[in-house]
Length: 135
Image 1 (tube, rainbow, N blue to C red):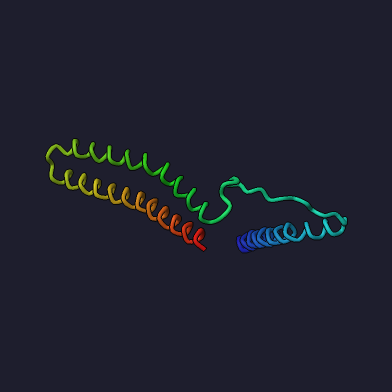
Image 2 (image 1 turned 30 degrees about the vertical axis):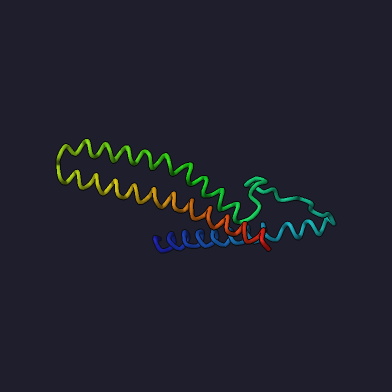
């Protein structure tokens, strides 16, 4: 009886998998079938979800870096405050001071990477703009 039960569930599982494929294929093909059958034309425009300012890759990267800075700078400030708390909490314990120093170094490395990415992206963007305007 258990063999029949396990086969039953494996058959149901296969039917479920195949039905997903059939439904997915129908969703892909149906618009072409029904639009052409009715003789109508679809005149829908795709609206840019990012807004009118982001129209190319450099503007997208610039906007992305701005978002990362807006989120990252407060996180860095909180990490520095937390590191100061670790130094105060250490109270001369060498192991805790070592942990606090590592935390400070990692926080400063993260800050340098974050701000460095911003500086490098702006430098590259301005260089590309100068090259575009000179030609």
